[in-house]
Length: 178
Image (spheres, rainbow, N blue to C red):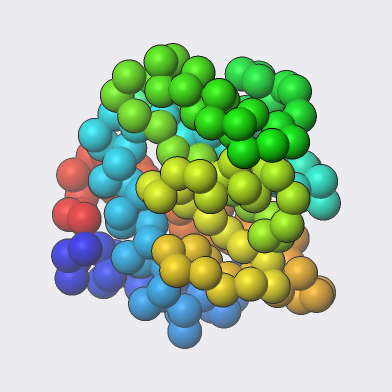
């Protein structure tokens, strides 16, 4: 991650005002994680969005917004539900799903998971080292930690989306290096 991306992130947090001010103290966690995932996107990866049940609304919000802009190219974010809407209850099911996705996305894919670290949805997302994880109540390497007990959680998820989208646009248009 370049210093310019870290500086850009700080500027975006400050320009967005109070709704992202909480992220300023955590930008050193946020920036490297997001920079690495944006690099995958530039390499042609598709991101498959998965959420736990409590964050299903955020999956809908994210997918409805990420390609709403008409000023930039479309980016490959899709819902797992649209590709494979069956339960994965065993490791073999997860392996078969990953085989299907490897065939479907030959340029590569990663999961974008928002939720707790329990259940098979998390296990699916965690089956790929490249996945982007926004985890609740658990800190894992290469994930962004949030508290499910935070009264401002929904607000923070939307603000994270906004900073993510601004970073995405800046990277796509070479306004900042990652």
